[in-house]
Image (tube, rainbow, N blue to C red):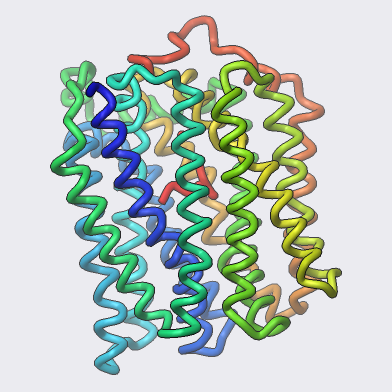
Length: 422
C-alpha cells in the first residue's frame, strides 16, 4: 500500500511521456511540412527549449515556496491548454508562424517548471515507498524508454495515416491526464525544510544552489558534459534525424522506426540494469555506455546505405545508454541535500539542457549551409570528444561511492535527455 503514490506518479509519467515522445516526432514534422524549412524547424525547437531552460534554472526558489506537487499539476494543465491551441488554430487557418512559436514557447516555460517540480517530487515519493534509490531511478528511466518505444512508432503511423496536428492534440490530452493523476492519486509529502525555504529570499536561495553546484566537482562535470551531449542530441532529434528521414528516406515511418529500435534496446538494457543496479560499478558502466551510445548514431546516418545497418547501430546505442540516466539520477540525489534539491537540480538541468535550444538552431543552420552529412559529422565529433573525458579525469570515479558527508539516500531519496524529462 505504501507504494501506491509511487505507482501513481510513474503512471502519470508514462502517460505524459508517451504523448511527449509522439510530439517529438510530430512537432518537427509538422513544422517541416507546413513551412518547408529546416531553419524554421530549428527555430521552433529553440523557442521551446529556451524558456524551458530558463524556467529550470530560475524556478527552483519559486517551486520551494509554492510547493513542488502543486506546481507540477498546474504546469501540466497549463501545457495541455497551450498545446491544444496549435491544432485548433491550424484547423481554422489562424496558425501563423509567430503564433506557433509563441504557443510552443509557453509550453516550454511550463514544462520547465513542471519537470523541475517532478524531479523533486520523485525522490520524496521513492522515500515514502521504501524502494532502493538506484533501482527506483532505473525503473523510472526504463518506463521513459518504454514510452519512447510506444510513442515514436505510434506517432509515425498516425502522421502517415492522419496528420501531425492530430498527434499534437493527443499530446495535449496526455498532459491533462498526467496532471489529473498527480492531483488526485499522488499524496503530498511533508516538506521538512519548508520553514527554511519559505523565509529565504529569492536571490540568496538561487545563489546557494549555484554555490553548491560550483563546489561539487563531479556534479559540475556532469552538468558541463550534459551541456554538450544534450546540444548534440537536440540537433539529432529535432533537425538531423527528421531531415534524414524526410530528404534521404522520404517517410516519417523511418524516423519512428529509428526512435523505436533505439527504445527497444534501451528498454531491454534497462530491464537487466534494474535487476543488477545496486551491484554494478557505476563509473565503468556509465563511461563505456555513454561512449558507445553517442557518436556512432551520427556517423552511421552519414555513411550507411542500408537502413538495417542504421537500425542496428541505433539498437546498440539504446542498450548502451540504458544505465546512464539511472546512474546520473542516483548520483544527483545522493550528493544534493534535500533542502537544495529544487535549486541545484533545476540549475543543473538548466545548464545541462542549455545546449539544447542552441543545438536545434545550429543544426538547422548547419544543414542549410553545409549539408546533412557535414552537419552529422560536426555534431557527432563533439559528442565523441566529451564522452572520452570521463576516462581521463579521476573526479568521475567518485560515482562509485556516495559522498561521505551526506546521506546516500536523503529521506531515502534525476536527467534525460534526453532526458528528457518529459
